[in-house]
Amino acid sequence: MTHRPTPVDRSRSAPADRPADRPAGLRRHGPPRPGAGPDRRAPRRRLAGGGADRGANPVELAVVMPAILVLLFASIQVAAWFVARATALNAAQSAVNAQRLYEAPAGAGEARAVDFLTAAGDWLVGWDQPGPACVTGVAEVTCTVSGDSLSVIPGVSFPVRQTARGTIERWTTG
Image 1 (cartoon, helix red, strand yellow):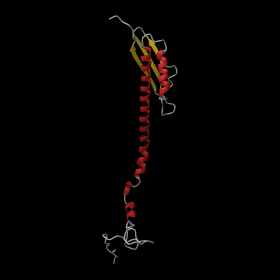
Image 2 (cartoon, rainbow, N blue to C red):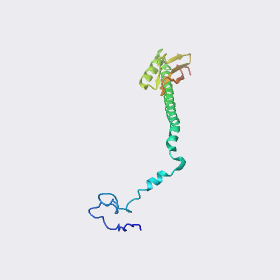
Image 3 (cartoon, rainbow, N blue to C red):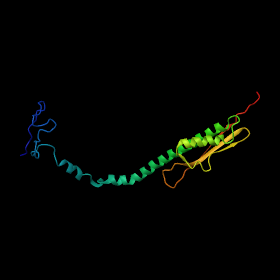
Image 4 (cartoon, rainbow, N blue to C red):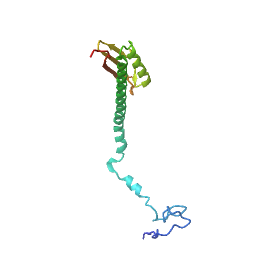
């Protein structure tokens, strides 16, 4: 004959010696009475099941995790390359804007690009060797900034080279 727990009337408040969050079948001290409280065999039954797939999750994770890490570092590297390209292009455009002014002194564009790259941070490394270069023609100025992208992978470099062009300001007869 099995022992059935006494039905509990939950409409009444809990007695003072028992908190409201403790089940009615549990005493204050000691193990629960037989037949009262949660079934302690349920976890064992659940763990005993599973069959052939038991332990597959750690193996799957060990196989997939290197691919996830490669994708993560590749996306960070691509983002750093794009930021380095944008930095080089902005420096080249800044140099063109300084060099194309009416009667701009020689070297004004290179100086502006150096100022820009110094303030921009380390997204573009190695830009100072040989440095920004501006070529002034009869009607056009061309400035080129080159360097390497900041690299997540040690020993690997990703070259960046950006060029900007603009017309030189001059007086014309109209």
